[in-house]
Length: 294
Image (tube, rainbow, N blue to C red; front, side):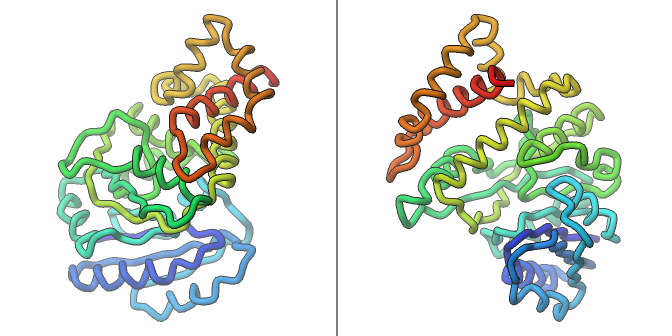
């Protein structure tokens, strides 16, 4: 019935697998859980214990595959007609997490369950927490989505996944899931949002999250300049605003603001109560900076 697929890199997800295994047995379904360790550079002491659980498997590619290719690799290893992809640094927010998804399997729907965050315990981890709390919670009714596709927690029929697959030409960090959603739309395949979240456990500190955001924006710009995905102009708020400002010849000014004041802007984001409006401005200025530089 269900293949639960978990790519991991430098994160020990045994506790996640153990909980999913418990819920699957409770639901009395045919299932498998496959974890792919994408050549982690650190030792994951408990990960091997996954193989001691029934219907659970640990596989290790010979080389690091990256965010897109590892998901395709997992799908190729799966045996059931429905796939549930989960990020490894997560944990189900509900004891009925799998049960909530199983109710939709007969309808062959693609569903994004969402992600939630616990309140930050210190000032070094406030930005991602506040950003996630503001941006990522789904509604508790099944809703057809027009916003970008996200991949931390989604259910999809395997035949639909194999029609689309993640674009392995997208390298680096970010937006391989956005492109996956665009391809779904191009094939007239809807995807839905439903409040069945995972809890994001591995919260990056503010500086790491800012750096990852910059990598994501660089990837966004590089993908957009290929001209293969014009849909990004409407799906990405920062790109949409950038293009408007470009027509007004304002982007060089914002690029200069980034060059001169980026550290000042970061100060508004890396503190006890990050300013998300300033964070949005920072992202826009950085996009203008890299586009001018390139």
